[in-house]
Length: 204
Image (tube, rainbow, N blue to C red):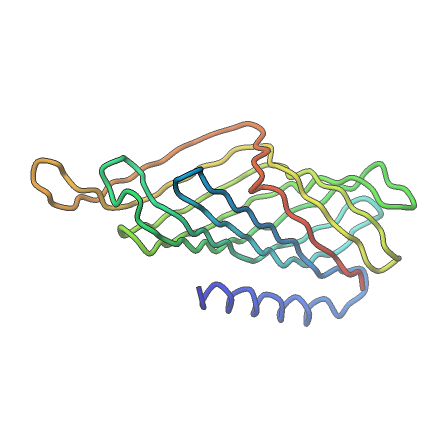
């Protein structure tokens, strides 16, 4: 957890130093999600993604987001492994992107962030380690507060996603822990509430 906050703090420091030029922006987004089953388990997730970028023209910019996510809740992969145990997972994320803005007006506009996102995760229970790769688009809306400050909202994800995790399971016959790998590949539109983020950017 401390490493996660340290990574975010360093990223913010780098963004502030680099963005001391014209035609650049610095800012970021954050999201939080909490759920609880009636009479059952609860889960808390949050993500903080500082970003900075360079404006190429009135519609196109390039940027990079460096941040992380934290998940806390019960872990149960296969039904035979540390069921109902409390666990936490920290994920560190690197996301270079190209931002295309359209339908622009005095109040703001709509945009797509197209790029590649890579994250690596480590859990506190069961030797959990993992990685995630995403290639696709994140739609969003920008609301101009002034000529320098813009409020952002990002909603969902459209594209390809690969998730790979290694964790320990207990063999029923021997009671010995075995390493298990699970990998999933998916493509489509994901509008899960965990993919909704809000933030602010400051233009230099």
